[in-house]
Every structure is written in structure tokens, then in C-alpha cells.
Amino acid sequence: MIGDRSSRRDQLTTLEREITNCRKCPRLVRYREEVASTKRRAYRDWTYWGRPVPAFGDPNADLVLIGLAPGAHGANRTGRMFTGDRSGDFLYDQLYRAGFANQPHSKQPGDGLVLKDALISAAVRCAPPDNKPLPEEIRNCLPYLDQELALIRPRAVLALGGIALNAYLDLLKKKGLIQSRAAYRFSHGASFVLPAGLPRLFAAYHPSQQNTQTGRLTPDMFAAVLRQIRKYLERVA
Image (cartoon, rainbow, N blue to C red; front, side, top):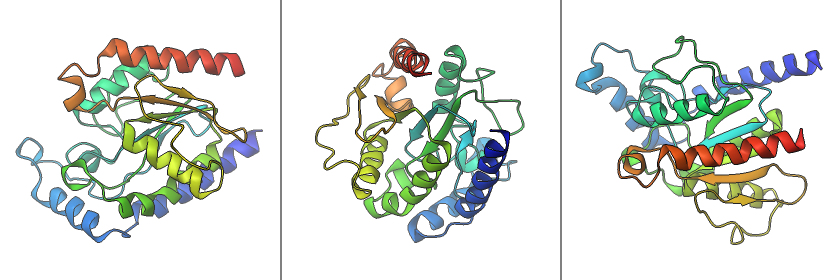
């Protein structure tokens, strides 16, 4: 078992190198590098990451969270998923309260944050203009998510938002594991039993400022989804 875990970490490290050197999408390459060069005034002393962002978390996780894409001045700046912006502030506080993280904040790599039994990935690994990746950009990125899931073999997947949910379902459809995504319509708090022994699929609103500051997504709403996931994982352990 120890050898298997060590091999998994090694394979994930190899995959991370492939992801961070990706230049498949010219529009995203231009945008991420432009943002990293011009910066935001509040972060003018930062050296921005400005590259694709790999997954972050426990390589032996039972839960994989799928976000949309790195924030232009969040993960595109820090190089770590959901790190350095308001979305991450919300998400990591919730993961901490649910027992999936050792601390409630995430400011930059090296700040001591450790995820426990959870790993965070995304549908797209480069910051897109206006947070809106194109369909072909999502398709270009899906093989990376596919490889991560194959290595980690989680028992549950949490899609953060409709785009993340549909990207994951499109991946399953392409592999012939589902026929259509019509039966899996996004709604906050939804839970789906997928065929072929696939992980249980959960859905939640994305913790974007647009959702959290308008009250569309509250801490209690997100906590309820994480409790649902925790109960499921305890049941199937």
C-alpha cells in the first residue's frame, strides 16, 4: 500500500510538470501571461505564477473538488488552486470547518495549508478572460482531469458550478461511461449515483464573489453539501 501511494505521488508530480508547461490554448496563454506582466496594483510586488495551475491536495483523497478555472489575480498569481482571492477564502474556511483542511485560510504556497482527504482540481487550468473559458479550451484541459481522477480514484466528486459539472459529465460521456448528461442537471445540493462504479457526484454553487456576496451561496448552504459528502464517505468507508 505504501509503495502504491508513493507511485501515485510520483505520477501526479509528473502530471503536474506536464500541466504547468501546457501551451495548448493560445488565447489563454496570452491572457494569463499578460495578467502576470501587468499585475494588479495591490500585488505589484508579487512575481505572478502566470502558468497553468495543477491540482492541489491529498494524493490519497476520497473527495475531488472540481472548480472552473484559476482566478486571474488569485491562483494565476499564487500558483495554487483557490489561493489568494475571495473565492478561496470562502472555500478553505468551509473545508476547514468540515474537517477537510488543517486551517481556514490560504494566502500563498508555503502558508502551512494541508488538505485532508480532499484534492482540488479544475475544468480549466489557465485563467480565462472574464472567467469564461471557450468550449474548445475546456476540451483541451479535460485529459488532465481524467488522468488525475484515474490516479486518485476518489469515492466522491464535488462539482463547483454548472460548467464544472458539465465538463466532468462530458468527460464521462467521451469515455462511454454515460450516454448523456441530460439526467444530471445542475442544482445546488444535488447528488447523483453514476453507473459503472463511478464516484458519487455532488454539486454546489461555485464560491465566486458573485455568488457569495449576493447571498446566492451562503456558508450554511455550502456546509450542508460538505456534511452530505462527509456522511456518504463515512457510509462507504
